[in-house]
Image (cartoon, rainbow, N blue to C red; front, side):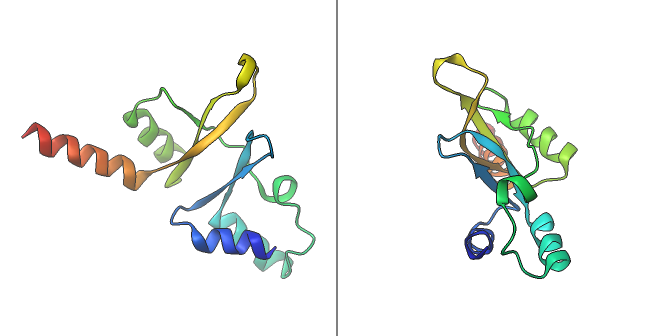
Length: 117
């Protein structure tokens, strides 16, 4: 439980990715979900992160555009979404590559506009 709270405190994103040992994305835990769990349960000792709190995430694929990423964030009401790449061997498993935040997308657009002028 302390690791989960520490992870939430350490990130500047509104979500915490939950990843299997092999790098496969399980889902994400939003800070809102974590806060609600703390209020409802009082003690997170019995929480199994992946099973109890992780929500399936419609992750972004590495080939998606920043416009698509921003639209996905808006549709889900999140400020960051996980990005996945295809697992080895072409199987259905998607490996977690990182988080893409709204702030980073907007910074990229700002740089593109500045260089276009």
